[in-house]
Length: 352
Ligand code: HEC
Ligand code: HEC
Image 1 (cartoon, rainbow, N blue to C red):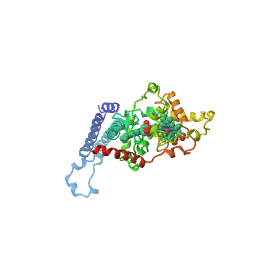
Image 2 (tube, rainbow, N blue to C red):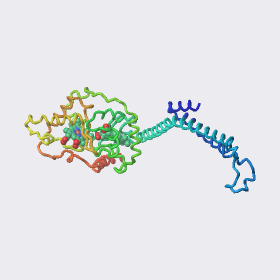
Image 3 (tube, helix red, strand yellow):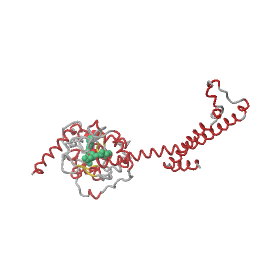
């Protein structure tokens, strides 16, 4: 009977049954212990002569030889057999239900983390990334065009064969911990002036991992029909590289041909640079711990990528910063003052 219950408990990994079996086992153990002390082998002699109370412990009479060889020995032996049997059954049943119990407990902890993570996500992240992590947008500190906040319920699928991200879980944690300086994505961990500790960040990541779907949007080639390279650049690149390619979070692009070894005016030297830019657009790039240049392989069709490169090519000038992103990087303070001055500009209107 106990065995049956235990097997069910183990198979179903069902914590109520496991709890019942556990209770029966522990109850049995307690009852056994009580019986042992009340009617067990050690008890028999005390029920004998009351006067033994006066005799010093070491000198009290024990069982007679005859008793020792018959009844006393049998009693002791049958208790021994009973105890061994009980221990055998107890250990076997315990061994069977314990893994199920541990699993059930871990599931319970996992569910707690996920639901705490969901709650934290809804109150901290949903305004930009959407209530179901379906993606959304954030205010752009540099212009009126909204800044896309990526969809997060397919982040595993999006980075599945990425060259810049090998461990999506770690990538999410790092993004949360440090944020993306210069973009609307703030840092969340306390040592980067965020409001959260590692535990809360882990819970959110646990939640996001629990809702992943294996679906990446198809490129909507129609949306790019007739768009010029300049327009595509303005919509997809300007927020990070500046309206005139002057550089911001991403490097200056006005001199990228020269930086990569092409001679301006000599088109025969352009090929390798175009390839490099195309690779960058397809794979994305990651500046460890800070910025990300997203991959555009799921958003821009091949001809749109070529027109953006044409646009960049048409804007090349000589000179300018040698190291791209150094010239373009802005500090969090600059970002903050940029959004402050936006607010300041609006306040008088609101007030009047
Ligand atoms: C103010 C809006 C905003 C809030 C609030 C916000 N994010 Fe973001 N998040 C963004 C933007 C914008 C980006 C993209 C930045 C970029 O362009 O590189 C981003 C990027 C990310 C990325 C990287 C996505 C990718 O595909 O590379 C993750 C992961 C992320 N956010 C998680 C979170 C989580 C979790 C929270 C809540 C704790 C949160 N974000 C809160 C705006 C926001
Ligand atoms: C979220 C911000 C962001 C967006 C949007 C973005 N980039 Fe970038 N880009 C970066 C960052 C950051 C780097 C620097 C990466 C590095 O240093 O490895 C970069 C690097 C580059 C480079 C290489 C520059 C060099 O000097 O090696 C090119 C080319 C480039 N981006 C083109 C584009 C184009 C074209 C678009 C639009 C289709 C675009 N980027 C959109 C942030 C962005």
